[in-house]
Amino acid sequence: MTPKPYVREIPRTTWYLSRRGDMLHMVHEVSSIFIGIYSLVLLWGIQSLAEGPVAYQAFLDGLSSPLLLAFQWVTLALVLFHAQAWFALTPKAMPIQIGEQFVPDGLIAGAHYLAWGVFSLVVLYLAGVF
Image (cartoon, rainbow, N blue to C red):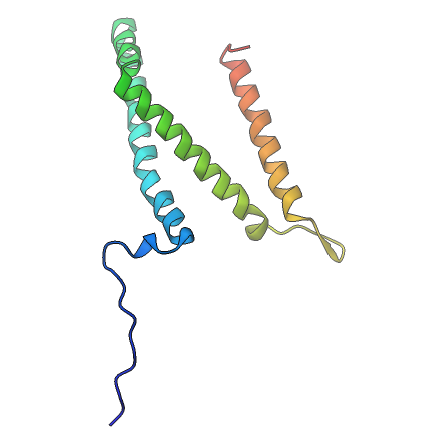
């Protein structure tokens, strides 16, 4: 008869609080809910734009409420968190080899941040911000 192997007890609801990596992973997963809701807000904006200027102005007035402004800032922070996580993983998912040497991870991630910045500036320019 063999003894029962030791099985470490793991809390069912707070297991992710014990390690920083697990906690960041859970924040990453939960943040998807905020991003999904914000995409629905954008669809609502497109629908109100199609309904005419009065409906679109009502939509814009609704976006300026304190509750929705707070939601937008939290969502922006979570989108930036998603982007940072994605760009940090890019060198591992897409290693670039030139000859026998691999391009440094920082250079690959930095190029992605640079492209993101350039595209953001182009979009802002096309939107009439500049």
